[in-house]
Amino acid sequence: MRQAGSSAGTASGVGYLLNNQANNGSWNNSVFQTALAVESLYTGQVSADLAISSSDIAFNPISVETVPIDVTISATVRNLGSQSVSQAKVSFYSGDPSLGNLISQSTVDIAGNASSLVETTITVTDLQPSSYYVVVDEANLVAEASEWNNAAVKTLASGPPPALGFGPFLLFGARISRSRKCTAESFISLAGANYCVL
Image (cartoon, rainbow, N blue to C red; front, top):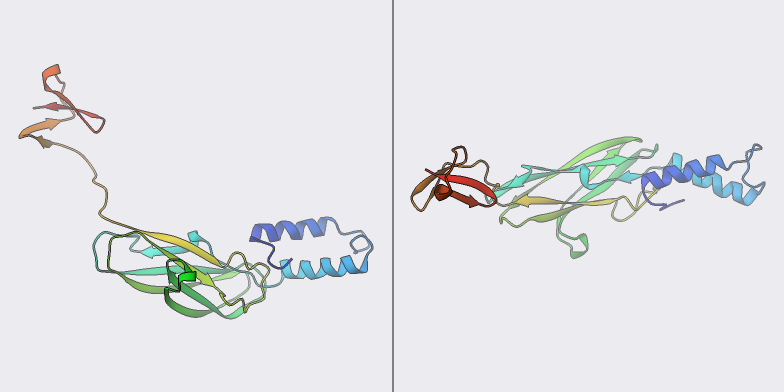
């Protein structure tokens, strides 16, 4: 059951095994199948399972409007298994980890069925959207129920904020309003909205 996929997949695998256990405690009255099932149940129910998803990554500030600016990247690393983990390495990357743009690394201890917050700070120097990856136990040193949930990515939004609100505006020196009733001669339309020239 090792590397069975997501934690939901692990849970459904455990449920399947428990539902197919015979009344005498075996699986198909086979010593071999029973041994495999017991090992899989142990892995799925007891062993550690470090996990991170994009929803576990946060930026402060949440977007970049001016540069340069320091941004804190926070990652909540979860242990979905019951077994505690000591010294799990957490790596932060700018862009795809296979390109090797490592920002920082740290180690965390995470109790079973708990989480730990890890943070790093970067200096953003341009207004291009950038993707940041967090990888947990990259070298696969921790025996886990699943190795498939150990990396996540999130994009830091950048650029000026969208314009909010409207009018009054100047149009070739004339004031316009959205609230006044118009005659056909004073009516204009901008970006799907109708206006009157005052």
